[in-house]
Each structure stands twice: as C-alpha cells, then as structure tokens.
Length: 308
Image 1 (tube, helix red, strand yellow):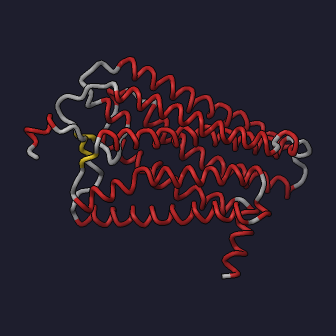
Image 2 (image 1 turned 180 degrees about the vertical axis):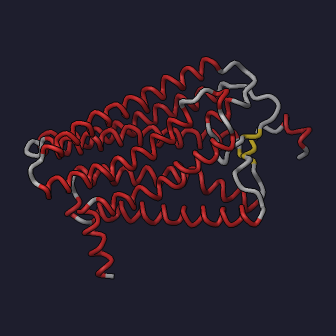
C-alpha cells in the first residue's frame, strides 16, 4: 500500500530498531541470542524452584514469580520485532498493538510491586529472622504476589482504555520496536494532556511509591548488617541485598528515564535504546544475577549441572 493511502489503513507501523546493514544484522542476531538465553534461564529458574523442595521458601517463590514476569515480558516484544525484521512486514493491527500495551504495561507494573515485596521479604529475613516465619508466612506471601499481578493488570487496563480513546490522524508510524504508550502519544491528534497527567500519577504510584518502600527497607537492612557481630551473617546478608539492589537499580533506573521525563524532552533513539535494555537485557540478567548471588539457588543449580 502506498504511503499516500496509509490514512485508510488502520494498522500501525513499527519502525523497529534495526535496518538491513551488516552491523544491524549482527546486532539482530545478538538480540535473538539474548532472547534465547532469557527463555532458557527464566524457564530453568522457575523449574528449579518448582521441583526442588529445598527452594520452597517465600523468597524463592517470589523469585519464581519474577522469572515468570520476565519470561512473559520478553515474549511480548521480541517475537513481533523478529517477525517484522525477517518478513519485512512492519504493520501491527490495532488489536495487536493494544494487546502489546496491555501485557507490557501490566508486567512492567507487576514487577515494580513485586520488587517492593521482595525488598520487604529481605528486610524481614535479615532484621527479624526469628519472627520471619510468622511475618512472612505463605498466605501473606501469596497474597502480596497476587496483588502485584492484579495491580499491574489494572494499570494495563487503564492504559489500553485511554489509548483506544485517542484519534490518530496522519502518520501511524511508531518510532519503537513495540507498541509503547509514550510513542503513541506523538501520533494522536487529540489533546493528550489529561492522559499525560494520568501517566505521571500512575508512575508516582507504580514507580516512586514502591521505590520508596525499597529504599526504606534496604536502609534498615544495611543498618542491621553493619551492626551484625558475625562476619558470616554479614556476608550472607550483603550478598542477598546486593543481588536485589542490582536488579532494582537496572529496572527502576530505566523505567524512570522512560516514563518520568516530559514529552518535549524525549528522543526516539534514546527511548529505543533504554527500552531495549529493560525489555530484552534485564529479563536475561535477572536469573543470572540471582543464581550467582543466592546461595541456595546456586547450590541446587550446580548440583543439577553436576548430575548432567
């Protein structure tokens, strides 16, 4: 279809991040390798936690939920990007675009809340080890994990409902490799100031409030660790906190950069690069970081490799 007639085509066009130059083809192959690693690492992490009774703890249960979210998140964006690049067909239907927005935003929000829950779990485990079984029982752990999924899904529904109400006139080219809400704001010919305010409020609720809880939790943890007399206990607490803080830093740093900036200061190139980081690279790094720093997971994983 010619570009002059694209007004009559309701589909959006995902511009992607790769061209067909040798360098970009190599980068695309690298992304596919990273995607495969993410699939294998997160699937293996979830299976290990599910099958091995030694890992049936609240902390490992939350880790399995994180692996599931990462697995679903990377499957929301990369397969469509790969299909568009290999087939040369960059169009995506309105329904497909809204589905991407729903799953992407829902999983993004759910991870924000889950990371806060994991910070609380770490805080209770280190600061109140004797009361841990009662303060972090299975019922409460399941309730907080379920709440993370529900709150994330609610945010996804809000964003889908809002973007469906937009009118799109003129270009329907999305300067991203997936349907992202900030990218759609540029295409709308209606006033989106109210929705931008709503996005900001959602970001405060879904980013800054959980981040505040994380900061408070780890501040208390660090103070407790410093006061520990046992060198072994201090080392164990330090390794647990370090793995959590690395993941939190990567995830929240990229998320705040994307969603807390004014629309006027956005650069499509920067948005693409940062989006690729936390939608492709972060889901791959999370299981690797936790498996290396979590002694229980690392022990089980090494024994499984030894048997093989």
